[in-house]
Length: 146
Image (cartoon, rainbow, N blue to C red):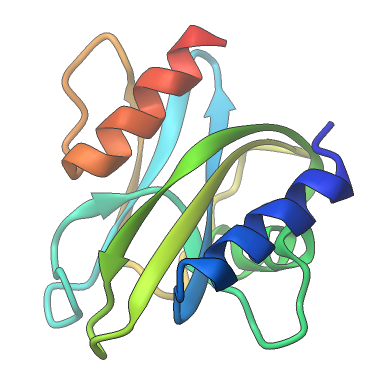
């Protein structure tokens, strides 16, 4: 389980680094595969595959944001946040310096996946080259180490 003290440290470090937008991402595993979502083609970075992820709202804790975003983007209910896998920085579509914190989570049930904001989803076997950005590839590599 991820400790609240770690979550606070992550937020404090992001503030020191002058990160403007916090984002959380989840690795959801089922039957040896990881859930990836495809961004709408008309959206920022349209068509890419990514982890279920989203912005942290003002005043919201990272763990609360993670649970909310997984539910909003997939319809799945997080039962436990198990590991912190690291972060990466990027510039958002609105030009904000953003940092995505990535965690492994357990869900009550892996099906059905109900998409609200993406065009498609896939359960990807990590023995293959996942169709994601280099930053997400690094997070998935860390996931495979645990």
